[in-house]
Length: 167
Image 1: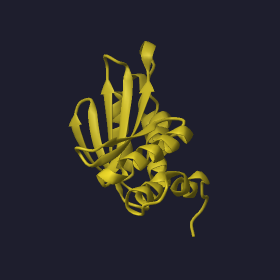
Image 2: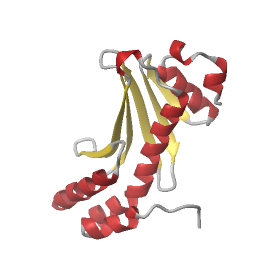
Image 3: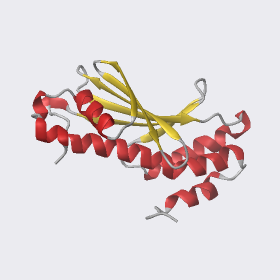
Image 4: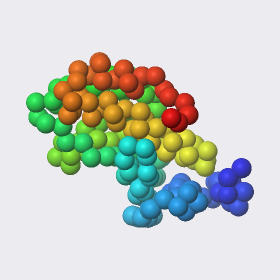
């Protein structure tokens, strides 16, 4: 049982408070942007990911965006969109989106907590882990498509088999 569940009743906790406690426990760099939003930097194998979680009381949803720099050449945009579509087809919990103006790719996920449901530490941990793992899994394929002129289908074959362990 995690520290948040041990020390507090989850129904009394704001979801962003749970995230902040997780970030402190893991020594992640973070900034509590507002009462309902937190931004963190999480190191992966390929890069450091910018992870933002925001709570919307009106929509009763906890939204996560895990972003990284991605500015493919204009001539590769069609191939990038194909690669993102192929990646999104195998991502059950979220989806990739490319924000060209910001030169960012993001993995977006939203946890619906309608009807007064409360987010648990386990749910939030799973959201963050799933997002970072998806970015780690598909980052090399996106790079191959953007900069290696690889066809999306071929590039994504390296991401389709999940690796276990480390070399």
